[in-house]
Amino acid sequence: MNSVLKGVLEEELERNLQKQRVFSNELTKYPKGSLVVVKVHGDQYLYRKFRDGNRIVSIYVGPAKSAEAKKAYEDRDKYIKLKQDIRDLKEEEKKIRKAIEIYSKIWKQIARGFHT
Image (cartoon, rainbow, N blue to C red):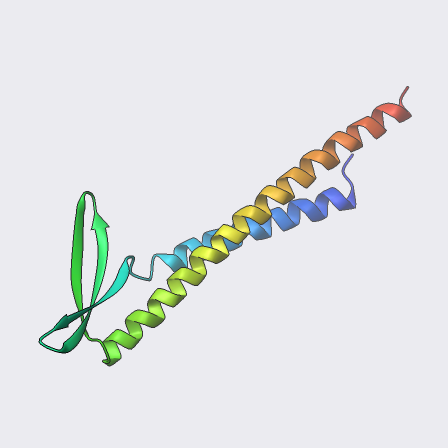
């Protein structure tokens, strides 16, 4: 026998998992890596650095104050936010799964008590 509470928890779990899928898919739209400002002859330039296996790759973004650099910073901020949102959702998922587990155990004990 299912109850309303278990149904609500299962719906919440599915909503959580769906959001994780959407956010993970969204994350792939943004470049990985760190942004690094390099000074060359008094001018500042922005590079994106990331790992490719054992190598560290640097990609030139543009002058540090350019529109390209601004977009790179915005993209980095969105990437960081999405990563944090995914971490938060995974923590929430653990709590929901634990609540379903506890509820199921209690429900079984109650059901056994009615049939003895």
